[in-house]
Length: 434
Image (spheres, one colour):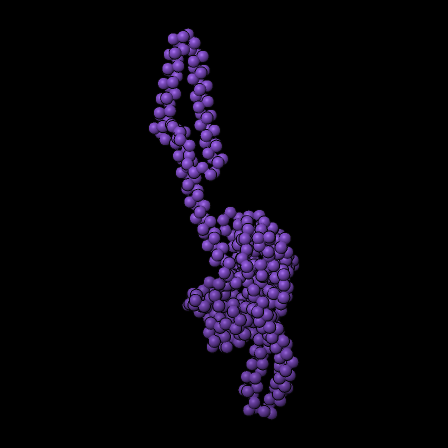
């Protein structure tokens, strides 16, 4: 390319010299210079026309023969064309392979472009979503899948968690929908039929709810008889220990039923956006006072402190009873599983990322491998320790469900022998300052 440019410059200079000499010979220098310039311009325009004709006529594979830098330009364009065709062929092969793989899936797969228009879908999408391809090619996905929850999810651009919605062509079917972004604004929509799983989960919830309510009446009767027997315990000294054990287990059963009913209610109620302004400073103080009273009643020696930076008063948008239950659960848990005379640090603050409430203890700690399972129902790190503490195994499951309803998350840090830290993080749009 550099050599051709140099040759072209020399060619122009020599032409100028020759035509200038001829012009001097006949006394018409500017005429001959004008002729030379015009001829050179016509020659370049002709080369441009040839290249343009070659580019327009896509059936011509080889570039037009040319000399100088025009030849270099043609060769470079030809090279880029071949490179583009190679890349395009590979891309088409990859897309064909991808579509072939998706076509065999039992889950629905829909490819949409940056505008949300359908580019392709597999057979399962036609069956589960009622799409008709290629008839629906170019149609916006929201015109065909009008569920408000799906529309909000699709437009949110936040696809970390999927959603469960009714199938647009069959309300009896439940679909788990997930979206993944790729390329420049393109998206893949995956939909799986979870009707059976949803039905089983609903059966489980109904069973837990019904059993919890059905057991309350007989448990109340049993507790009543135990209380009556306690009134005449002086006449039956041999029953004092068995009655105390019965009463202890009855109280534990009451707590278990209460937690089951609370968890069932949290799972079945809609997760509407709560708008109550909660002073987290005031609530944190209340929670700490209640935890201290609970420790005194159970004769537990715990040092509970509350840290609120700058005594800042701020508000959280949420359901007051639920938030109070979650925060108290965390502090009471720390009291249960801390050592005698243990230290428990409670703190709350806010920043640009949202609202934070943290409970830190210097207890026995938890093996990190068990942390992911802590919020499961009835999961116990240590069976004997939970029995001694009278826990139901549902506390953290309730906390997690409450936080989910408030768009929050529970962060757990712990190391065996070094204590644990449980932190609630609420999103910034639920924060009100002042």
